Image 1 (tube, one colour):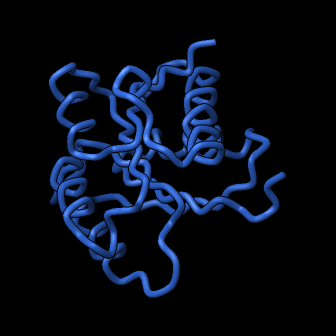
Image 2: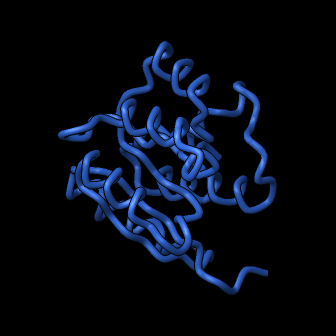
Length: 149
């Protein structure tokens, strides 16, 4: 049983998507603590300044201003201080070439932003439970988390 809140960082510049994400988290039975960054440059400055503990997981949108999600993921995985951070791509696009590239770049999971709130909630929960239970990066076949029942 988890008692300590899971520290989650969301990097997304869409206010509506952030609000839906936060609402979905609040409805889960998992204790969480959410912080939000609205652009890639802000995200990387924050991660590189963290002096205590990194978040348990980063949900990373690909279309961030100032530094996109691909650039952020590359910096994170290239940094000895950050490369163990579990990154879940959280984007409206599910272009197969992007999915493959992001898997090969070290992302932990990929969630295509669902339009249905219940599906969003299930996708977030599935991804978080996989991190809690396994801590092992899934195979490419299980990389894309859909939230389907």
